[in-house]
Each structure stands twice: as structure tokens, then as C-alpha cells.
Image 1 (cartoon, rainbow, N blue to C red):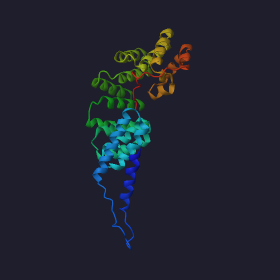
Image 2 (cartoon, rainbow, N blue to C red):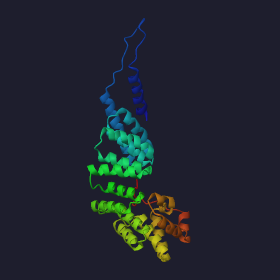
Image 3 (tube, rainbow, N blue to C red):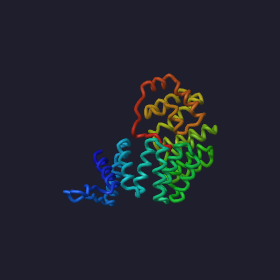
Length: 295
């Protein structure tokens, strides 16, 4: 982007303290460049806004350099640092996200959004206790935030603190009745605990909220298949994969917190001839039903 190089050049001039000609035989009066720091900050915030707009269209690779420059031009603005950290989170660069988010926290230590974002970065680095600590700190400032409660539940889940995980998922749903990923994850826990009936009930409740949610639909399919209801299981699995083929990937399911028991049963389901054939020519995921964000 041309403007980026232009402003970087101005920063170099500032650092040099201006330009001057030799003292002897000067033909011109030396000119010192005067830079308005307020204008630099304004430009930085403008770049941050532009980066945020690009991020809305998932143009992260275009947004990142703008966001980085924004932090240089407006280093005292927590928004620019938070934006940069958020873009790293969106591109799964969790380690890179920590430093700008910490800087944002230094500038605005009582901002819950920064603490929640730090929790997401910690989760992505598999530092689950740190994620719990940051999310709890954010919830102390902004209680009952459904997405933060969901992330806290996920962190407890990874720490094998299952009753606490379910409690946070329940709180998330209490704050947002349509927050089906939290209901879905309660089903994941119940299934690993051997409560197949309770798990299926949770996944069915999630589907009542979003009929195009591929995850609970595939989970039900795997459970039915494991119970011997193979025809119903394959039909449900086929419908789920037609909505979003990513759920045919066991590694993707692990990222979405599927446990060992459910993964094993899903592997058997996916090995059925009809689903193997479907996976050979995968259907692109439908925009109406995105995978829930876990980090």
C-alpha cells in the first residue's frame, strides 16, 4: 500500500532530526521537517479502521500490515494493539497475538475485551489455566458475557474440570438462549461420560435452534450408528457433511473438542461406504452454518 511506505519514510525523517546542508557556502536555508504527532496518530487510527474493515471481509493478509503500521503511528492507542492482536487470533497465530494484546492491556488494563482476547490466545497456545485466569478477570469487569462464558467452559473442559465446564455453558445459554454451541458442548461432555441419551438430547436441542448446524447433526449420527441404528446414522451423517464437509475430518473435530469416545464412533461412521463416497467429492461448507469458534 503506497501510504504505508510514505508514513514509514516520515518516521525515518523524524528519527534523523531533520535535514540540513553543509555550513560553508550554503546556497539555501536549511529546511527542517516538522511533523505533527497528532496527525500521525490520526493516520494510524485511520489505518486501523481500514484494517478492521478488511477483517470484516476476512481479508486478513491485507489487514495485518495496516494494523502493524497503525500500532507504530498510534502506539498509545489500545485500539490499534487490540486490533493487531485480534487479527493474529483470526489467523490462528496465537503466540504472535500475545505481545500486542499485552500492550493493549498495559494501555487499558480494565478493558474486558482485551482480557477475553488474551484468554483466547492462551487457549490457542494450550495454556488453559492462563486462559481461565484472563477470562475470569474479564468476567469480573463484564459479567455474564455469553461468548466469554463459553470460552471459559472450553478452558475448564480442556483442564478436565467437567462440572465447571457444564456450569459455564449453562450460564452462556442463560445469557443467550440461541447460543447453540454451548448446548452442543454439553452434549460432548455427556457423551464422554457415557450418557448417550443425555448427549443426544443436548444435540437435538442445539438443532432446534439451528437446523443447519452440521456439528450436532454429525454427533447424533455417530451416536445412532454406534447404537446399531446404522441406516439412520448414515443418513444423518450424510446430511451433516452436505452442510459442511469439514466435519468429515477427525482432526477438525478434535479442534472442536470432540472427545475420544465420540471420535472413535465417528470414525466408524465415516468409514461407511456412503460417507466414504461423499467425502471423495466433498461439498463446500454452507455459509449459513459456520463452525463455532473454539478459541
